[in-house]
Length: 98
Image (cartoon, rainbow, N blue to C red; front, side, top):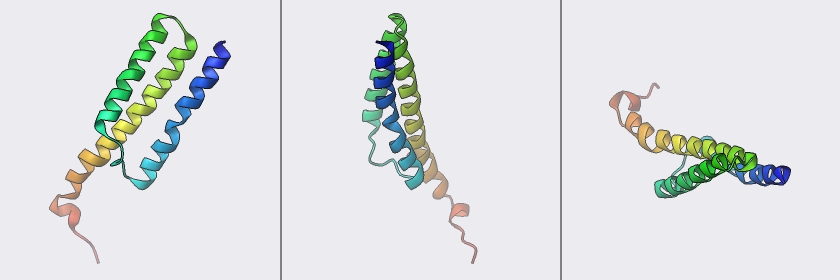
C-alpha cells in the first residue's frame, strides 16, 4: 500500500514541474491567481500535517514535495509579478546602450 501511495503521490506532485518550468522559461505567471495558490497551498499543508500525524509516509512525503513545488511557483510569481516590475520601472533599468 505504501508503494501505491508513493507512486500516486509522485504522479500528482510531478504535475507541478511543467508549470514551474513553463513559468521560468516564459517569465510569466500572470495566469496563476494568488487566491488559487494560497488555497491550494493551505490544503496541501493540511494534508502534510494529516500525513505526519497519522505517520503515513506516502501522504507526508508526497505532500511535502508538492508544497515545496507550490511554494516554488508562488515564489516565482512573487518575483516576476511583484519584484520584477518594480525593478523595470526604475530609470536606470530603462537605459539602453546602442
